[in-house]
Image 1 (tube, helix red, strand yellow):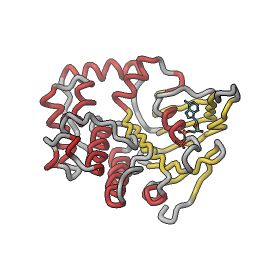
Image 2 (cartoon, helix red, strand yellow; image 1 turned 90 degrees about the vertical axis):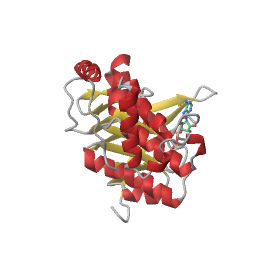
Image 3 (cartoon, rainbow, N blue to C red; image 1 turned 90 degrees about the horizontal axis):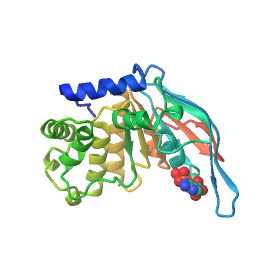
Image 4 (cartoon, rainbow, N blue to C red; image 1 turned 45 degrees about the vertical axis):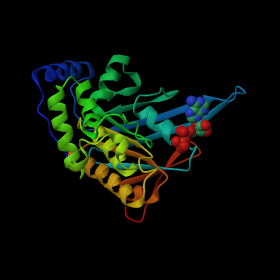
Length: 258
Ligand code: ADP
């Protein structure tokens, strides 16, 4: 996937600059670092379910990491923590200089809008908007003008083989096309960290391959960190590295192609 660089308007540059002040001078030199992460939930009978026991790993800039494990092992829980959508019981997560686990609510919100791309199994697109309108939304939230945001969105869709679908309502696209639009929406802001939770769970082999290659190529070309939770071994094999989640702990796995 090629990354589209969009020139920032003066107003957007000011917003980005002020939020960079909040989240520190930004460089992804140290990638993603996770240290002794633990998470448990309370079951209806009051017991604690320990989902993540002591998770530590790091991912270098430009690297793609697959987290594999059967359903219910805690992959979504881990991704939600990495994206700052939930709080751990213990441990720390940092992305470049930004420590997610100790961030204030407002700097976390800015981090998510400016540095994070999230892709879900069910794409969560706005079905009554066009593909280009959907992809332009994260830019408009960053206060890019509508015309500039739509131009960036169209470029992004074109570079992902969806040129003829830009003006189609998302509800009229196939499942594979919809998920590729969701990938464009996640990458249009050039995020430093991309989290994908079972992104190919509903796709056929050809579309799974397109989505997986878009994400791993994005990491390589942009020096970003991509983490993909999946039970699809073929998708995991396309990533630079694979870790298996089992009994609340992560262990390295050697895939045939890695
Ligand atoms: P996976 O993504 O690997 O399928 P999840 O992270 O969704 O696994 O879930 C891991 C375990 O945590 C499951 O047993 C699930 O029932 C439990 N769980 C997840 N979220 C909650 C929650 N909010 N409250 C209680 N239990 C939860």
